[in-house]
Each structure stands twice: as C-alpha cells, then as structure tokens.
Image (cartoon, rainbow, N blue to C red; front, side, top):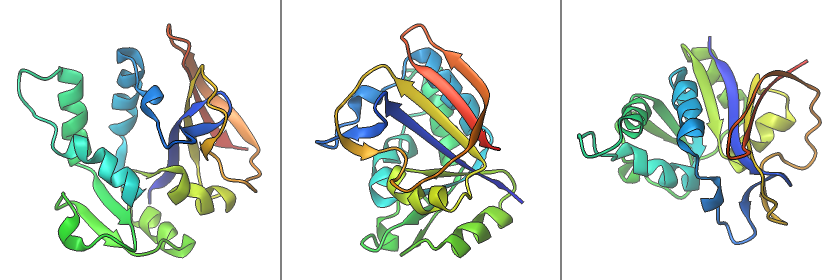
Length: 187
C-alpha cells in the first residue's frame, strides 16, 4: 500500500502560477533541484492533469548524454521510471508520450484511493487542480512546499478554497536563495 503526497512550488502569497499562467519564477536552483531529485526517488506513481503532464514531457524526453548535467539526467531517468496516471477528458491514449502512462477521463476519490492502495511506494498527486479534491477530503499524507520569496498577486492557488488542514512541520530547509522547503504531515 502506498502513501499519497502533494508537492508544489508556491509564491509567498500561495500561488503555483501567476494570473497569466506563468510559473517560470518557480525554477529551482541546483540545491533545490537536489531536494526534488531525492524526493522523486521514492515516487512510484504520479497522478497529474493534462497541463502538468504536457509540461513534464520535457523530462520524458530529456537527453541522457554526457552533454547534459548529471542531476538533470538522473531526474529524467527517475521520471521515466515512474508510472503515470494522466487525468484528462480531452487527451487520447495515442497522445501519451510514455508507455508507463495511462489515461483516466476523471479522477474520483475512490479511484485515487484505489491507485494509492495498489502502489508500492509514494503516489504523488501533481498539480493544484488535480489535487484539489484530495486535499479537501484529507487524503494527502505528505505535503511538500517549496516557497519562493516572491508575491505574484493572483493566479492558480496551490491549495484549494475550502481546504481545512491541521498540519505538523516534520522537515524544513532554507536555501541560500531564500526558498524555503517545508514538509508537513496531517496531525
């Protein structure tokens, strides 16, 4: 049986993307990327929406050659080794870029729990929109936030409206660039 995790890079005012949909300001430093690399090593299944899946296609096709940084090559290898459940009512199976990806048209909480129960490691639900119902329902067992010292004033919230969480801080780290990594678990 797996565990359900949610990770997001967020602005100080709680947004994963700004009002224009831009999230380029979330790009990690080498030190932050190293934490992502360690974290992704425990993930066996990713549950993600169409937009996030398209954005992560970068790692599905990342070159594994000596011209690329070793940390990025390793992240690409780890990403390609993860099973993916893509939630979309508009994608077709032919549009999936990985033989480790499967498509579901909608994700009920029952289906999500079935995915977690059948997993051997961490199931990460990736993307605020896809994760919203699970967050509200209290299904997330680990929250990983990378807080960027920037406010964007609006956009896509990392946590959904209506979410009521009571969390314990179990790990934290402050990086030289001011980004704070905060790992929480429900009380």
